[in-house]
Each structure stands twice: as structure tokens, then as C-alpha cells.
Length: 120
Image (cartoon, rainbow, N blue to C red):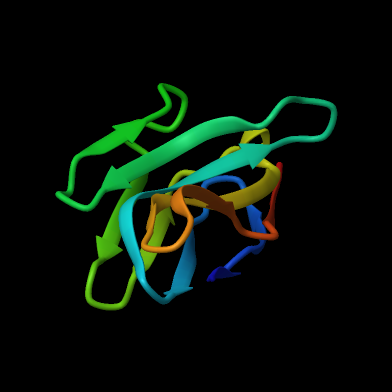
């Protein structure tokens, strides 16, 4: 079983910074990649950033240069450092994990989401 615990959301003024964390609790599970997605009101969920177990990263164009994803493999934790936040970054941010369970095979797990609100 895999569980994700997210933290770090909140309210910040435009131009400010926030750091999101997502810790995975997994047994008999090999993590391949972790990442962050977001969903703004009335919009579809979209990719923000992902990072593989080898450290390869991928970013949405809208956040490149402002957001940095990192990962602590020893702690099975992924971080999203967000700088120069804009009101359009306001959304619920979801942690995502993909990997392979010894019992169940390939799995994809989502966190419950953490709200980020950027005021103008």
C-alpha cells in the first residue's frame, strides 16, 4: 500500500514563494517517478513538474525558471520550490507517484491535494 502526505500549501502574495512537500509511505514498492500536478477552478488538471528516480526532470512551460522540483530518494519525498508566484498559479496542487508494487504491479497514486492561493 502506498500513501502520500502533502504539505506546504497556503496563501501568498504575487511574487512570493512557497515550498510543497510530498512524502510517500510505501512497502514492497519501487518508485519510478514523482511529480506535481495542479487543477485550477473550472480547469482540467495539468502537469506542473515531474522527476524520475534518476533525477531527470520535466516542467510545464508556464513554470519553467520559477519552480524547481527535487527529490530525496532516501526519504521517498518530493519537493516543489515555487518562486515568483503569480495569481494564475492559484490551484490545488496534487502529488503524483508512479511505480511498481511487488504485489499489484504498476501503480499510479495521487495525493489528496494542497491548496495554493496567490493574491494580486
